[in-house]
Image 1: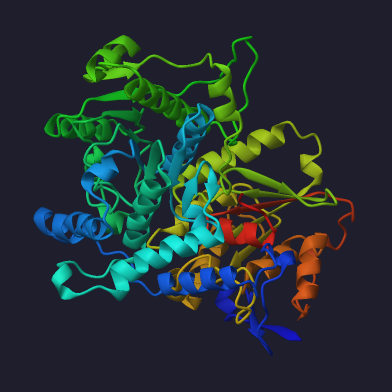
Image 2: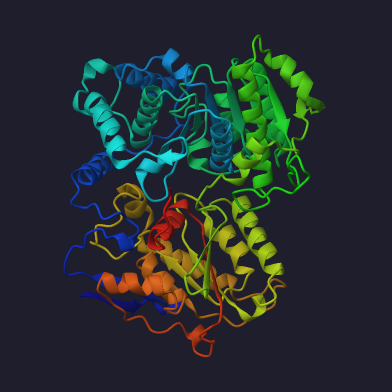
Length: 574
């Protein structure tokens, strides 16, 4: 029996309970926990062994503390040498007909839309994105599906043998980092799977990102830019725009989402001239229609997805023309499809009327963990999940949620609660300031663990670094203090009564169960199966709340948090 107990934080932190865990034994995977029942299957065991090896690889290096040539050698040239050792040449990579995608917000969604459109157009696609939500194999997809356990193991084992086991100083590169290894592996997979198009999402930045070994992409995309990963990329929008636009090449057209920051476009224009790579601006649209003038719904929720999907439509439309039309001229294509310019950058005509293939591509696209809704089986609880981790993305998440609730006549009679975490060097102050405007009935700050310690259920969600470095007691004391100060005043700066229903939880399963008053049968089933004895006191907001009352649970602040929540809720990625 797992025993849960909690203790009070010092009085300056609301005497808030922290849940700790004592454990008696290890627990294996089970189908009820969102995994297939394959623990004893040889392939699944080998897959897990691969993940353990992957997790031991070094974390990423900083990109702004060295000179240009040193960084090129450390990150770009070394990655090229690794691919060469895997017998993947520059020409092999060019033959993947790459769409290279970067940006601060929306690059994953735009990549997913682009892949879906091309796949529905009859092309075999490869998609490389990061981070994964539940399993590492999600990062590498063929025709919209994650690699199988067996395929991942086979490809991983070959690349690991060549790049790690057979590494020597004669290779003239250091052993690959976590993301660098997966980047090389993705190119190896796409080459051997003979994809028609590879959509490659940048990890961080662009200029010095490991993916930037592509010499001749067909198209590049730059989504909305903002301040994120500042310790790696720089503290100004100009520095970040410089890094992101480093993926542009003279072989391609760069498609740039209209930017909130005008100075970002200025830098992108300068870099496009420097790199001899033409760029054009893509504006957002308000809606799409099919050939019969019917409105088309997007497969990913939120108004911001109209900008991301428009960018994907323009990129995929260009890609198809470039690959199927004889004597194709990119400069002529830009002239034909633009109608004006903004600060000297051509602006593309909006693409609103969609044929059946484009319609299906946008409508059938799925990108979990972004403006996602999951409803409990009994209909009492709705989980609103978004991995937002910038100020702008949290703003759009809240706008999306509130827009939905405007149409809900019963919203005022429902409870609204929050599960929150953040990672890295981000400042959570602005995040909490925005979120606190909803005046949540209860808040849980959860550690980045799906389940209690020693259950051996989280090793495939992320490597050790995020939980061991970022999940400190000091971090949660900081969150509680921040929230305490925010809750003293309402939006008009008037004093208000402090809401005491704020808690730190050891894991997401326990946190969700407390936030939902044990009304989600799936969570109770998981608790029972894990043999966890509940010792949390009842959430006081439910003392007089109707048993049939509806509860809205917002989960945001981190893609890691979103992925772990999906794991707890048994969501299947594929």
